[in-house]
Amino acid sequence: MASGGESAGVRLSGVPETLLWNLYQRACEARRPDAVLADPKAVELVERIDYPFEETFGPPNPLLAQGQALRVRTFDAAVRAFLDAHPDGTVVALAEGLETQFWRVDNGRARWLCVELPETAEVRRALLPDGDRRRTLARSALELSWCEEVDTRHGVLVTAQGLLMYLRPGEVRELIAGCAERFPGGALVFDAVPRWFSERTLRGQMRTAQGYQSPPMPWGLNAGELPKVSTAHPAITEVRELALPRGRGAYYGVVAPLLHRLPAVRNLRPTLTAVARFG
Image: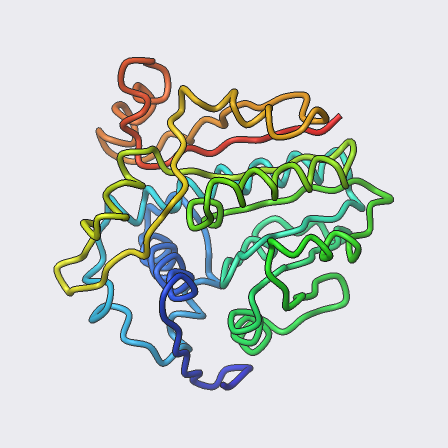
């Protein structure tokens, strides 16, 4: 694999390959003149990586790409709010793959720890080399020994973007409980797919026209079930959903905000993003 401005070949499969799907969607949106997310680093990576993005994932879908970008903006807003309150704090990004959030939200003081499976850690280090305040740890997020690597002196925010749905329900509960126990005063920002979406992936029904099939997502959580997250550990003092920013067009400008507010239809949304705070 190459670094710098050279072309880089990436060969992944299964769940790790989804990092390329996420990157592709962000770059597709970021290329638009009216983009809802400024992400030049994502565009740069897609242009550098030797991978058949369109042949694998299909041609750009503006609705899908914008939805992904708005979800990412929700995470960005949560991280910025944390850094506003804790300028020297530590952000722990669990399985962020080729997410380029650091370059969008960095305040010049925060520390960033990426916890990645060994094969994705190798890809990230090659394409996004570690820096003075940002490093990648090759370890499963489920191996809670990574918590010992975190500087907790100035506050901790853990993010799990596009991760928990690929874990088993018991693993999700253990991971959330482990964070709550080890990072008092900290928080976890995560996303989840609803149960209907999870069930479709388990039946192999989430496939693109090009034949790319989403990996199974064993963990699903409906928006109405969000309070259950607080039962994972007594130290969890608050769990609340984060609202998606308004976007372009009728769906993301009108329909999506309604899906967030109306109890009768809120479980139809493809994803929800939430924050769990630890006392």
